[in-house]
Length: 346
Image (tube, rainbow, N blue to C red):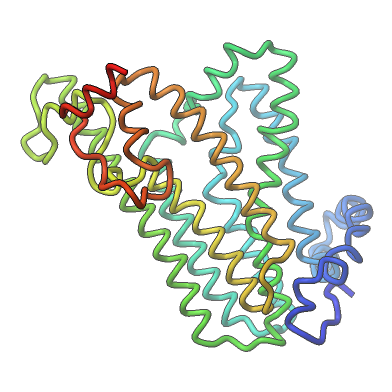
């Protein structure tokens, strides 16, 4: 049996009942797929007879060595980055497809599929327009790290974190979808699903707005540096563009509003699974927690680089919250005012 027999919503969040009994399926899955590689019907049976969480996890493990080999051959360590906006939706659609194949109620999961696809489309578009899919494109942070980590250690870092841990992370943030799948026969879709759908969509819209504001600023800054003239179509001043980083719009209240929104998407999905199962917490939240930990570390490193490039950035850090707007602050204000000068002198 690929799915557990459950009699309550709370049981859907029980790791001992919904995950632990199926872990052993990982051992036989590679051989089963290898032996049935040329038989579509047999592959379909394997798919249906394997717990969907286990098969999704197996895919994340399968992709890790591919990312590793591709990154080492090309000496480009943004291989996972290129799939960052795609893989979570692949996993979510997998749960939806599995539910359809098993004849389970899918109204809630269908909503998730639509929302996840919108999330992917937005993030993929933003990554594409910044040149992320161009040949040779790589996150600048990997290049900086390679300067401080010797090749043997960086290879280990690539194996453990870049290729493996990140691949598993992109699977883990979608684990609440498995709980939504399990609960579908026991908890009919209702207005709460509309509420959580709107929360996730709101986070996606917030991320889109923040990224668009950053895109407009960077384009204006690039034009200004090329022509020495403020573009006539922009609302930014020469002072704004000379500063080097955006402090207007959402960025006046959060130093990383796009990161805040991105993390919120997966926190809201996790909260959705908690609500459906009448629980305050469950094991599927480990993915969202790991995602937030990664963003904390990544943002710290990003700001370390940024504060070294722009002298006023430290003032910006004092006035504006990293993710969540400060309840005591009134926004960024004018970094060039007397208060800002005094802080910089200190």
